[in-house]
Amino acid sequence: MNKNVKAILITLCILLMISGIYIVRYVMDQKSLNSDDYIGNTVYNLLNDGKFCEHDGKVYFANSYDNDALYVMNSDETNVKKISSTAVISLNVDDSRIYYSMSAKSNGQGLGYVRKSAGLYSISHTGSSSICYTTNPVASALLYGNKLYYQNYIKSSGTTIYSVTTHKKDNHEVVDQMVSFVNPHWGYIYYGNMSKDHHLYIYDPATEQSEDYWAHDVYMPAYDDDGWIYFIDPMSDYELHRYNPQSETEEIISTERLDFYNKIGDLIYYQVSVGTPALHRVSASGGDDIIIAEGVYKDIQTTSYYVYFRPFDNDNVTYHANHYGTLKVEQFDPGIKK
Image (cartoon, rainbow, N blue to C red; front, side):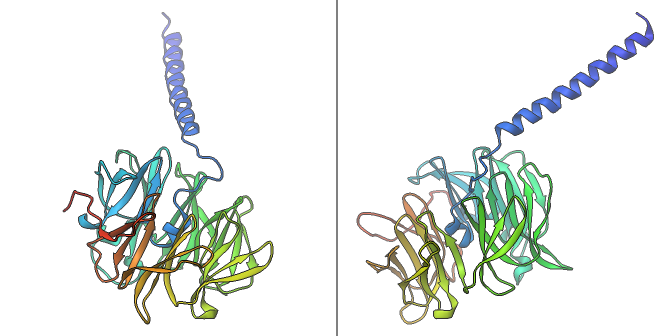
């Protein structure tokens, strides 16, 4: 065989192999794509640090008994397994991967926002094939469709909102301010502007443009599937309210001064630390308000079976209570401890 012909054939074979690799990667990427309106965790869990996330009958969580390492269990708390030793917050999950911010527990001690977290990552459900999107501090992240929207801290310019695809492409700034960016609804993302006027804003992922949606101060806003926007009202002594944009009506759910809240279905859990400090449960319309645990708690997380929460002054223990039936608060024991 002529040497030139042989060289050409070898080159063609190499090109075919390279093309084949790219085709396989493309097909695999297409298989791992989410729908455009896919949300990686509940808005309410993400507003409370995102330490629990339920997906396809599994609950992924930061284990308080193991330095907030990443674990998984069935939704009924059986079959607990450790996935990674990394301390995690802001969990998001889809069919292919687990997305998270690395908690400060993974990178040493320190005070202040900058030390709260150190990077945005994803891994497979088995804990392999890690992807690093940024090593900058990331306190909060949202998986929406096939993009991650995250609070990106840069020392020279502060914290703004960036987006990047799940395949680590097109990483860039989309909002040049510090905002609470976790509330997709009907193809848009709603957020409370924390550094400007505290109004509720709407962001269009297609145009990457934001505008003032409701000229009302809001804290922890969440546009719910029931058509109401739930929020803590700073102008009314931090009461829990809800607002219906269609009827332009506003309702008071609780007159307590709230610290945090989480909603699942028709149930709302909220924490108050003044007067009689306690974790409460109330219906979405404001009825049947009861105390489920006295004391000050944080990191309120919900799954289909349970509400989870931690004492404000102790990161090494978690409590839970079943949403329905006899209300009984117990220490959550995943069975695998440090």
